[in-house]
Length: 499
Image (spheres, rainbow, N blue to C red):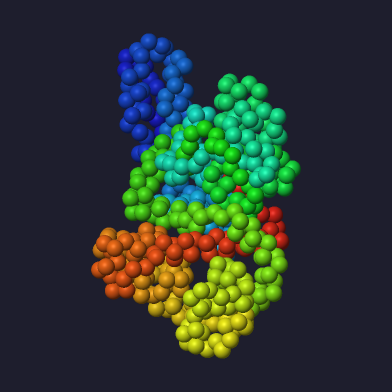
């Protein structure tokens, strides 16, 4: 115990050690000033101040030891949940937007990142209140109710609550139209707070809540016609419409909201460190790259083609899966990537033919087929191996400094538009101050190849540069849908993270 004695007109104030191992050196000057400023009256006996309580009911600021605790134990604890928008185990280990940001922040602090998984949003917030974690990183929307209980870091993503129904089913166009519909939403989500706020204007508004299902599971129920409609964040909707293409957004529910990390109400020092780190993280473009990695490929949504893909994945893909697996293992690819690319090229039609003469399940040109030793482009086995081999050769032609996954996306773009145009675009990127090694930057530059003021100065001239950008997005989209479906065969799909 350390003792601070303030002798002022015979008034002695003792301050006890606070929880968290605070030492006398760490005792903040502002609290000493507060003690010195105590009223002269009421000092008939010694008074104790501990954890913010003072004499005559005076409330003093709690000592903030949040960062000290993190540093002393050498790790920061993040409270999160399994979901495709926050934290999950992917092909190459742990992944997710929240996971990657958390790891980056832990590296900045020079401590380990430990993730504590909770089943629901209420469990996460309860754990934060109970000091079971330092930061809640779980796709939390910043709402009026929550800001009264927690500190929030900077916004890293803007989302919009959407009213989602099934195509061909209920078709509400406004909040008033929800009257009489079976609307099911996740408990303890920001959706509840929004709907409660709307009841003053729409007293007939009603809905059901459940703490046994995630937003993603509820969306599946809407798709399966077991529920009329639900409310979900725009990022969750965007991901799940690819798995359930009949899901249809009817209208937006209120204004956009920000998502941010939540911290304990007295973690002011930690909040300040998060804000300073995030400012640099954003200025360097790291956040943009992260958003592009997890959401850049879902901007393109084609209801008809997505539905056809899901159907053909069940009917056609089994015939060729082993061929994709064999070629992928031989040339160092994920078989799901080759399958997704093949679908984009030919819809898994081994006899496909384009007006320009490319043919087969991988749509090889005749010169390319000859280069990789394919004698019959209509033979699925030869075509798939030839496509994988050619793609691997192109991947080796890029600078060694280009890392994954950017190297793969650039390789796919080159397969679509040609290496010459990719090199032109990389040169143009350098002139425009962009990074030619990052797909997020190249996706901005490639469409410029169709503009005269740019292509007339390039070695390979005009190109429909928007096509490889769409091409890569679609392949990533198809691969993600395929992998999601494969995971669902062996376990329940990852949960969506409600706001």
